[in-house]
Image: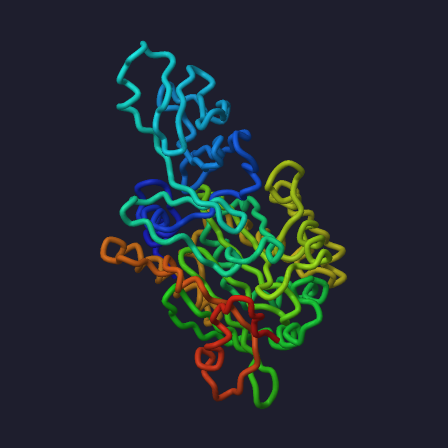
Length: 428
């Protein structure tokens, strides 16, 4: 159980907070590349770690991420003109380039040196894997650009979505590393879900609802092994990679289904972006798979049109269907594996009060993830390379497999946990 002070430290990510300082030392998924699809397209509001920002793609296809509010009179640059290699405020015409330099100040006298003294907050950005990434920390401590496996694949081998989650990032991320809930929250939907269908793993998940957990630290975060009984000689292991600060790779179900993963990125202390991706390292995704993902199946969602807010949300009780619940069509009555997760995570409140928890043995991964985050905050000024920030920490996979009862899971799954370009993954 966390103290109130520890909980506060973990959940607060605004500028100047200890966890906010930690998160700003990583590259952050900021927005989908398709949100700013072409040079000089309309700018887009972005909020990350409590900061209101504006993203734009300039005439030369460079990407800018600036403080949303003009340095002159704090008007929102969302209403600005994206033109001629800069974003011009609609109020008095001050114009900024992608690096936050003030390149034009038409309201000042000709020859004025005033603009040379103005530097607007701007964060570097890169585009990779269909996502715009930003780094918001000290420039001299910037780590390499991420190399998660799905980012390096061809476009036709991955599908990416994001959605608004109305809760603090931590309780969302903790749901992603909690394998024990799968046997309950998703119990009646595993056979229907496109990521789970047609696999032996479903059988073991439903037959053994009391998994035993073994958790080991990795260079990038944690290896979380959930062990279920398969037969007299073997255990069925589902091994999740948690990569700091907020990534999970979902253990796969069969090699014919795509892999999946998530990131939970704080918008502010009471909301986060839940990123989701499916990918297959050895083949393009099929049209049937893509159609299901676009329709919001699996780890993706149906949206309120024109937004990234799920159609099933807090305001409508997640469209809960008590009849479906009574008829065992859905364990909670909420449709869709993703909505089943976030409905329960949001039900804890905007920020979960962890002083009220009573954690058991199945929560070992959650306990250790919190400890690793707290330790990273404590050691932040001493570490040159943060856990999860180096490419070698990110070139990993999750797996699900049968192992003899006498074989430790880290040993038996060692090769399966390495991402090998172009090769399929190990899964039951």
